[in-house]
Image (cartoon, rainbow, N blue to C red; front, side, top):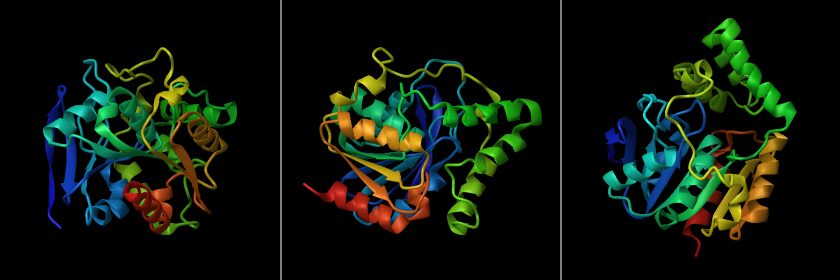
Length: 270
C-alpha cells in the first residue's frame, strides 16, 4: 500500500499527515496527548477500501505547537481537507478527537458524510468531580514534580488499560505518551486556541447534528464517557450507541477487531 506523508501549511501552522488508499474518504482524529500512531490498527486496514487521512492535531505529534495566533481545530481540519482535495469524509475521532469531530460537523456539515465518536469528550460538558478532580491533579503533578511525573500519572490514569490487561495496547500507548511534548500539561491555557460556537455550548447543540452518527464507548471506560455517549445519542437525531465489551478508553487499540468490524459496517451501510 502506497502511503503519502508530509506537512501541510494550515492557518499559520504545519500539520503532519498521512494518506493511503482510494475511494471515499475517512478522516481519523487523534485524542489528547496522542498522535497518528494511535490509529495503526485502522489506517492501512481501512485504506483497503477507502482513502484514509490521519493527521496530528496542532500541538500533538509532529505538527506545529500553537504560536499565539488565533486558530480552531475545526478550521485547521477544513483547511487540511481542502489542500488534500477531500470534499466530504467519514469523520472518526477518539476522546478529544471526538469533540473536534462534533464541532467540525456543526461548523461544516456539508463536509461530513457520517461521524464516528469513540469514547468522546464533549465541549460544554461538566465533568463529575471524581473524574475532573483526578484529571486536574495531573497539572498539579507537572508543576510540583515535573513533566515526566505528569506523563507517568496520565499513563496510569483510570481510563487506560494496564500492561497486565493488554500488553500490546499499553506498550503502543506508552510509546506515544513518552514522545508527547507535554505542552498542554505545561500550560493551563494554550495561546491562540479557541472553540467555535461557545454560545450556546456545543453540549446544547447536539440536536443540530444531522448526519448518521455512531457513538462507540468502552464498557470499562470512566462513567463520564458513558454519560456523554448517552447525551449524544439522546439528542442527536441520527445517533446510535455501540458498547465494546471489556475495554476501557482506547477501544480501537484494545480490541481493534471488534472496533474495525463495527465501524466499517456502519460507514458502508445505507
